[in-house]
Amino acid sequence: MKNSLVIQTLKKISLSFLLLNLTACNFLGDHSKAPEPMEETSKEQATQKEDAEAYVVQPNYDHPKFKELDAAFKKQKHRFEIDRCEFKYNDQSFFIGNSYDKIIEILGKPDKEPVLTLDKLYSSIRYNDLGITIWFSEPKKKVYEINFTFSDLMDGILVKYNIVKFRKTPYILETDLNQFIELCDLSHEGNLSHDKSSFYIENEKKCEDQAETFIGSRPHFENIGGGHMTITGSFDSKTTGPIRYISIEKQKD
Image 1 (cartoon, rainbow, N blue to C red):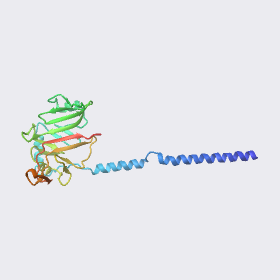
Image 2 (cartoon, rainbow, N blue to C red):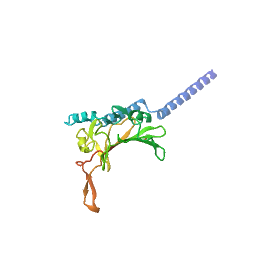
Image 3 (cartoon, rainbow, N blue to C red):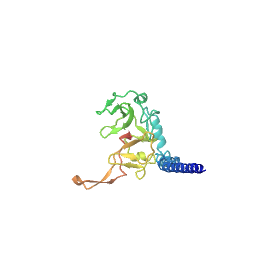
C-alpha cells in the first residue's frame, strides 16, 4: 500500500513539472514569435492609404487650347509622352528598368554605340534628333536614367518636334513653364516645388521602379540690392522660363 501511494505521489509531482514547463514555453513564445497577421495587415493598409492619397497630375481638358494642342501633337512624326511610370515614343511604351535591346527595338539604332563611364558602372546612348540620352546600369544594361533635352539658351529648339506630352498634358517647346501649368492642375502653391536649378512634383504617386523627375526650367528669384551686393530674395512664381530638359532618374535602392 505504501509503495502504491509513493508511486501516485511521484506521478503527481512529474505531471506538475510537465505543466510548469509547458506554461513557461508558452509564455516565452508569446514574446519571441513573429508579428501577428493583424500587424502585417495594418502596415499594408497604411501603405495603401498613403499610395491612395499620393498625387497624380490631372490634365485640364476643358482649357480652350487643350484640344488644339492635342491634335497638333498627334500629327507629329516624332511623338514623346512622358508620364510618371511609362514613357512612349510613337505609341510604343518603354520604362525605367527596360533592357538595352528593348530600347533599340523602339527608338532604333543610336547615333553612337554605348559609351562607358570611367568607373564602368554605367553606359549611355544618344539620339541627337530626338534629344534623348538613355543611361544603363552595367553590366546588365537596364535603363537607369532618361534625359530629354529640348533646347538650349544659344540655339533654341534642338529636336525635330515642337510638342511633347508631359503627364498627359501637351507642352509647346520654348514656351514658359507657367503657360504649361495652365493646362493641368499643377500650381506653385500646390504640388509644383523647386530648388535653385529646377522644378519637381511633390508627393507624386510612386511607380514600381521608383524614379525622380526633374523639370529643367530655371526658377526665378527676386534680387535684393545690386552689383556686388546683390542678394537672392524670395521665389518669383510669376516669372518662369521654358522647359529645356526633363530628366527621369531611378532612385537608388
